[in-house]
Every structure is written in C-alpha cells, then in structure tokens.
Image (cartoon, rainbow, N blue to C red; front, side, top):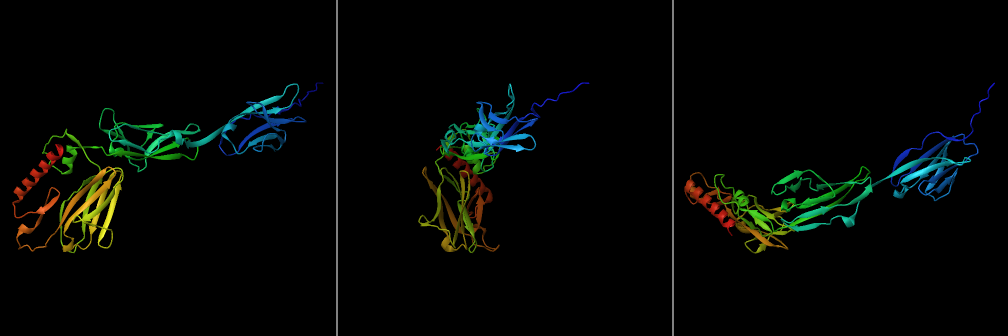
Length: 387
C-alpha cells in the first residue's frame, strides 16, 4: 500500500502579467497564491527592493495599498499613478530556505503636453525669406506632431526650386519648414500633439509675412481683364507698398432714391485701420445714412460703403483709406447721377461701362469707344510695369 504525500508549500496560481494604466488613475496588480498557510505575502519595487506592503499592511506611503481579494489574491493598488511609477513590481512569499517570487510590470501612459520653451511663438518674416515653425511636446508614448491651418485651408508648401505650391491638408513633424515665404502662406497654424492618450493638445502659432511682396505685371494685367490675345512683357517685377488699395469701379452712376454700394480691396499686413471720407474732408460714420462693413480673409480686406437713398447731395468723390505701420494708401471713387431717360431722348447722355470703369459715352461710336478703352488699359499696364 502506497501513501501519496501532498505538498503544502504555497504556489503562485498564475502570472501577474504586464499592464498599462493612465497617469493619475489607479494601477492594480494581482498576485494569486494557493496553499498560503502560515506564510506571508509582500510586495516590493523590483528595481531597488523597496518594501511596499507586507501581507495585509501598507509599509510605504499613502499612495500604496494592499487588498485581499478573497480567497487568495493579494492586490497591490497604486493611486494616483505617477510617471515615475512606471516599472516592475515583485510579489514575494516568505518560504524557507529560499523565498518564492514573481514579477509583473506596469507602463504609465502620459497625455501629451507642449513644451513652451522649445516651441515657436508668433513668427514675423519678410516675404521671400525662409521660416521654420517648431513644436516640441512630451508624453508617453512619444506624441506625434501634426500641423494644420486654423482656417481649415490647405497648408501651402513651396516645391523645391519652384514658385509653385503643394497643397496638403496637414503636415507631420516637429518642424514645419517654409521656404521663400509667400503672403498666401500667412495665417494662424495649429501645432497638434497627440499620442492616443486623451486629451490631445494644440498651440496656435501665427505666421506674419511683412509686405515687401512682389506683384507681377502678369497679375496686374489679369486684374484689369485684358483680352487673352493681348500680350505684354510679364517678366518684370516691382515691389508694392503696403497697404495696397484696389478699386474695381472708379466711376459709378446711380439713379436718385436707390441704395448705392461702393467697394475697395485692401492687401496689407499688419492689420490696418480703414475708413471712408467724402470730398476729401468729411469722414463717414456708420449710421442711418451710411453702412460701413468689412470682410477680412488673411491679409486681404474688402471694404464696403452703402449709401442709402442716393440723393443729389451724395454726388461727389469718395475715398477708401487704409493705413498701418508700414504706410498709407487710398482709392478714389466718383459717384454720379443717372437720369432715367425715355427711349426718345438722345443716347448721348447715357452711361456706358467699359473695362470695369464707368464713364459718359458722349455720343461716340461703340467701336471707337471700345478701342480707346483698351488702348488706355494696355497703356496703364505698361506704366505699372516700368515704374
């Protein structure tokens, strides 16, 4: 007859395993032991053998606690979790002659945080200079840096050795290089740091491009809407003074009693102070008679002046004025009365429109009037090119 002897030695029931927890939360490691008998279970920090708990008592600090999950699992709880708690922990049984132990590790995920001292502030550069926007962030796992425009427009990246742009929705990298900056790249950029640990963080960085910009004769001729068959030299460039004011219609006519809208375009940076004046003297204010509005998009501003119930006293000259620290510019518009004549009256007093400008026809033939108009438009283009 044979008698089988059962071991009464304590044993680990299962591995502790490796676990991931978030910063500031609670970490829980379980150590399951069978046949514990009169033996004791303790938790230690594996790196330096610091004793944290002994059986059902906490030895080190208020952040550590031990909980016996019946019938035989000793749980080590750490709360609130810090980044320095990342590492391995030992569950030990005081058996003789040698202690039994096993190890489990925890990883602490830390949400991203932008390092202000190593991240760009607002940047100001002259046009055609190079600029680099930098963004650095901490976190675990290491966060990914993504650049986007705040206005949801594409990010413009100039192609190497070219004036053309690549349009991308976003750019990934801690540095955003901008080669030979153009005014169209100006605006607010968002540096977004994310590592799948909420919340993601961002910083707003404004790129200012001071207006030493280049305006080509090709763009001017396009603006005055030359016929496609008209060819002029387009390789001449000249510097534009900021702010620049453009008036689409310099001479306007309207019947009495109607509402009249005057419009000016402004391109400038930094921001401008814009206003309207009448007959070189009176500054116009928003009120019952006049409505003054602006529409701003990046470095471009559209100025609107609405004159209600146009009367003979409103006939005259109006100036849209724009000024900032780099200079001052203005555009001039002349406002006339259009008389609503019957069909039997002479056509010589009517208003005609050519090339975006309004002027009295004075009985000229349509062909002669059109040819003279285009002559002056082309002449204006050459004057802009060579002055």
